Length: 520
Image (cartoon, rainbow, N blue to C red; front, side):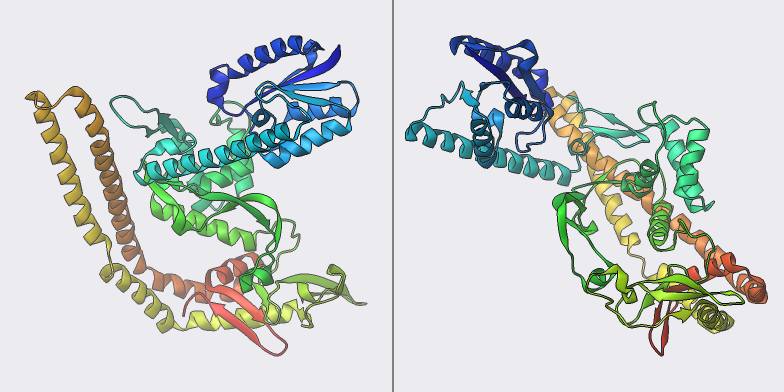
């Protein structure tokens, strides 16, 4: 009697709910009796909810360990596609088991040594792989089509701040605002955009106040707060198709400036914003607040202090004009004092096996900081430059406003949708329309009506924010006067805040410094 192990697998939650893995196991136990195999209870191995396209499955790992240790003589599997969906993986596993003296037996494909049986197994493996690819493509196209129709059912649940309402016979699936969680979302955005809290500080506050997470258990993590600040659903547009599986990119600064990449392992990669499919959902925060939060997140990539002990005014703003790498701060000690320098990363030979890639020389920190600060002070003294830029932006906000035409179109669409809903209800009341037809046609109209209302509300919020900006513009001149009078009294931290508002980048060359301002 052979000592054997049983392996069964299902890949989806639906298959688990339908208990198909139990039917596989019972069939394999009966098959073991037919083949005169002894199968201990602990060697009935099941992988619930694991894809057959991957070899990283806990049950399969355990099965391979048993074979390598020489504890089994046969492996019983329902069909080749239960072992793996990829033909290459099937052959790899069967050969691995064969080297360990383990025979692989299938119920749906009795394995034998004849060339015909080998050919049949190859065909079954290729058909299983083709079927999997076809299922994935159909699922992808179906989800994309539903996303273009504005259905939130294609998204994986609802983010924190919403409740996901399932599809019913009377309405499509939709997001409903959870007011308790939505208040937390607004508070997090206020802390980050208005009160200048870091993501770590916000996380500590959430945990100190014992604010429950989405699952009501556990602690808040920085990554959760970071994802909340980047989620466009809170401004009223949940997005589908934001990422894709692709080779991991190791992007350095010079490569990024040249538009190049370097492949590594596989990972999820974010697609360009233009390729996302927007689905309207209820709004929790304004679009301006979301844009400000994302602007601060982008700035945080360059300017975050992290492990910096002593701050500097130009931290995160310096780049090498020759190689494109950033400049970091280093120091040397003389007999009297410590002197700090800005040094190009590309000029460090110890960082690369091939030696340095740049010959740019270090620059004294105190001298460079002073030169750039004097230039910014001169810029702020030019009242006409600031006022012209402010006037240009306000004029663009007043005149080049495409939202007015969009608002008119939305109001027409809203009136048309409501009129169609009214006609459907009238037809049903007069028995000209059946209940089934009403239920099939009403959700789409309700979804269009809700989308128009949400976009109109967003436009109204934008107009209110624009009016606030116009009123604040009158006080900017007086603010500049106060700023000019106190420029000489600012410390390093305050100078750095001013520089980051007005400077995009400082390019340092051998004999030239280029300061790229935020104001033309």
